[in-house]
Length: 483
Image 1 (tube, helix red, strand yellow):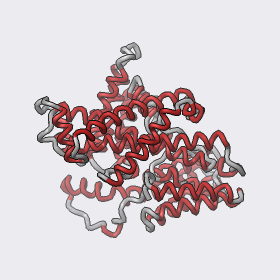
Image 2 (image 1 turned 135 degrees about the vertical axis):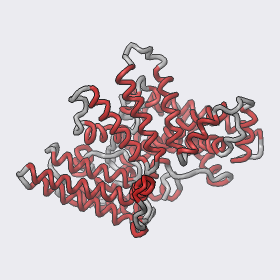
Image 3 (image 1 turned 45 degrees about the vertical axis):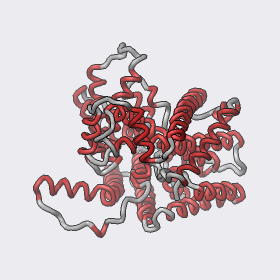
Image 4 (image 1 turned 90 degrees about the horizontal axis):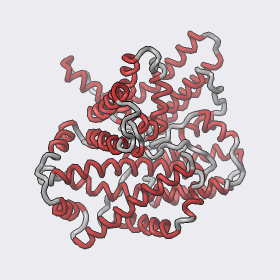
């Protein structure tokens, strides 16, 4: 069930209605049942993996809290982490690591078809969530959750299980113990506003902008180098609007169900450093890597050299976390190099007004490897920027005619509407976050003052949704559902 589908919207409307009819004491169980039903629609057998991670981390955290010996606690924690990360490796990385083993020259290891279930949706997210929870209990940040239903919903909550935000136990579990009988009016309005904006970002911006990117990348040998460069920059907006759009939808769904999820983006492309970019992009993952890998490695406590190594390690881990492919490892390594060079050479006195633009250029270059199907394809994209810089309008007409429409008039309409929508999307995203100081507070009131904008956004959502599901059927799953 795609989040950007009529079936999900209908499913969610039913869940919201039944959620507040259901007695409070049964509500967590109801939401857990709905979450597992939602998960089964992707692939039923993958639910076994989710339940397995839930059981292991639940029992391990309780066991850690019961023993007094620090040595045994560490053994229990290590065992829980090994099992959870082992599941992640088994389903997501085993073939990748075996291929490396073979390529190095150690020979071929037998088949792994028995474990070829595909990658369970959200595996990378709920595994990290479970590991973070066990570490927090070990660190005595909070007591383990004894209610199995509450803990199961913490790992299974359907709006965020597929692509985050990666939740923390001290944020979600207390909310599950104190669900309100009736919906909070302010939270309800903010939730609807976030759903509206999230679908606008995904359907109108990410999906429609990706048509151009896909068209250019499919014709690298004949398009202008300038067209390739534009496609590289456009993809930076595609992935931002796709992922932040999903996060907005997830947070909005949570608010409508009475559960607050953490903000996952805070105007990242306005950042004045790569460090700030990663503090504002996929915040739940960045903070997880910082708290559970970077700090345990020593952070910056053991000299600059060790600090640079630790920074580079967490970016390599971040790259590998995104996918079992060298393109993701290289993407993470590039950002690691950016951060280390920034620590070593860039000073705060560097002109702050141009730094967001420099960052955007650097980040867009790195996205090439993230987007490419292989390292060879990424290098092909980079080399294609050196193609002769000819008429980009001719390229645009060719790409759009090939991908979507036959009418030049309609192609012009497409270009103009997407440019207007892009401006609206960036403006609303920035203003709403700035007003709410990063937590969307006041978003509904802000949108109230923009009736014309809301009507325009609504028409575009409906128009492009119908168009994408009818004329050219380009609408697809959210990019981060793959991870």
